[in-house]
Image (cartoon, rainbow, N blue to C red; front, side, top):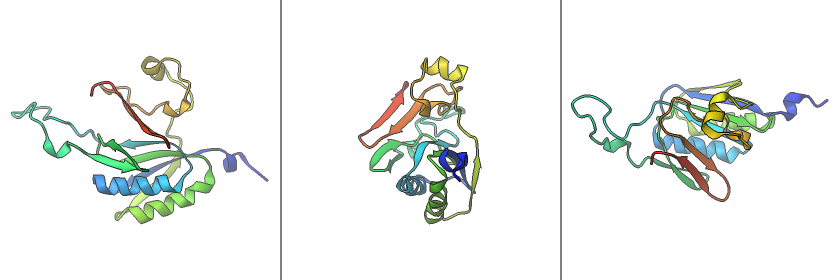
Length: 167
C-alpha cells in the first residue's frame, strides 16, 4: 500500500551542536548534495558583517569575514552567515537515511536531525511584497523578511544565480 508519506516530500532540520567552520560547512553541504533528492535548502545562523557595526571601530572592515567562498556541487558562492542550522526539503522518504549517513560522515561533532514543517507551502503577504506573484514555489519563505538585503543563491546543474540587491 502506497501512502502519502511515501510519495510526498519531507522537511528536515540539521542542528549541529555548535557553529560550523566554512570548510566543515562545505564538506557537509557537498555530502548532502551528493545524496540527492533536494528540493530546497536554507542555511541559518548569525550574519557575518563586513564592517564593525558599532563601537570605536565602527565602519572598519572585518578581514576575517571576507572571501568566505564555499563550493557546493562544483559551484561556488559566498557564505554570509555562520552555519548554525540547515533546513532542507527532500523529494521523498527514501532520501532520509542517506541524509543521516551523509551527516555522520561530514560532521566531526554531535548533531540532531529533526523532521517537521519548516518552509512555507503557500505565498504569504511578505513573499508577495518582496517578489510579487511567485511562479517558482521553491523560493517561498527562504529570505528573512526583516533583512535589509535579499540574498538567495539558486544552485542548478548549469550555473549559480545569486540574487542580491546590495552588492
